[in-house]
Every structure is written in C-alpha cells, then in structure tokens.
Image 1: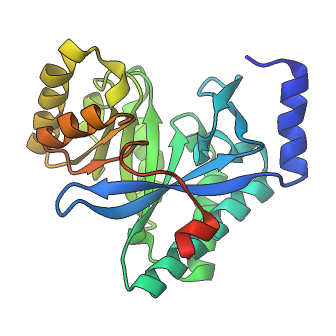
Image 2 (image 1 turned 135 degrees about the horizontal axis):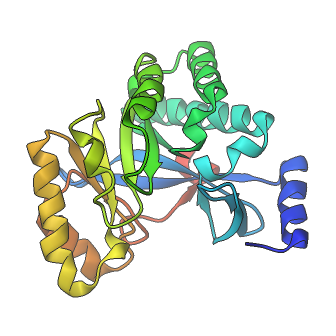
Length: 253
C-alpha cells in the first residue's frame, strides 16, 4: 500500500491528465513478427494502481491499462479511443493487421460500463472488434465460473477476442479453459525457479494446445529466458527482451 501523499499524487495525475499511453509489443513466434500491442499507462515514470482487491499499490515504470481506468470514466474513454485510433492508423500506414491488447482484472470485469464504453467506441470509430483482445486477469481458482462466463459472453457478443491472464503459477486459469470460450491463455515466465521452468511451462503449453487455445508467455526479461521460452513453442511472447515499449510517436513514426 502507498501513503496518502502518493495516493493524492495519483489522483492529481488523473485530474491533470498527466497519463501517458505506451504500447508493449506482442511477438508471434511463427515468423517472429509483431502481431499486437498491449496498452500500458504511466505517469512521471511511475504509476499508482489498484490491485485486484481494490487496494492501491505502487507499480514501477508502467502498468497495464486495466489497473487504472476504473478510477475515472473520462480516462477510460480517452484510453480506449486513443489506443484504437493509434492501432487503426498504424494498420493503415503499414497495410498491417496488428491487434490491440487491453488487460482488466477479473473483479473489474464486473463493471458493466466497460462493455458499454467498449461497444460505443468500437461503433463510433468503426474499429474491427476482431483486432481487440481483452485479457482478463485471473489470480485464483475460487471464482464463480457462471458469473465469469456471463460477463465474458457480453464481450464475445461484440466480436472481440478474449484471453485469460494468469499472474500466478499458471494453474488457476487452467481451471476455466474447458469451460470458457476464450482464444488465448497467457502465463508468466517470472513465477518459476530455473529448475521448474522447463517442466511446468512445457506442461502448461502442451495442455493449452490440447484445449486448442493459443498460449502466450509474458515477463520475458532476459535473452536466456527468451531463447528458453521460444524453444517451448508458445504462440506469442512478450516482455522487455522481446521488444521495448513504444510511445505514441514511436509507434506511428
């Protein structure tokens, strides 16, 4: 938890719109090419964000989009419209088809206004919904499968892609793969010792293939980790060793 002064600094950053949008590349292993960009937010090189319990915590350097926007509806609309516009512009300039990735926590998914705002902006901008991936962060297996399915179905009706993001050991989200209509499972490379990595990651990737889901491995921070994960055969990878986060200007230059 952070002090009240840091909490106020975060609120001030929201009020002054001192929030910066950047884009973290997502690499498709086949052909080793950029296939999408994840929205990340920062302010003053640091970010204060609510975690899944609603407590405000400090994150270094940047946070994923879903950790911030619920504090402010105007910010939500700005981030959605700006990021969609940027990806549309990029795809027009490059004749490409990269997708936009936006992460939200399981708890924040229950805010029905998110789906409404998402639909309104998709419709207004005429953005292809198949080029949006909504990543739902799952931190434990003790959640209602029926409730989760209800909210995911609302988003699926828009035509967007759904990913389950497991920030733990990778097992929580697997409890839902057979039950939910999702395209991708994202697991973190950071949660294992070196001795565990090959056994656990290779097993998770094999299971995801058996469920006919795409698999993404995140938090790849070193060249050694990059080489190791690539050999395991996931569909997508992301992390600082995969590619640095780009500013709006760098994305579109």
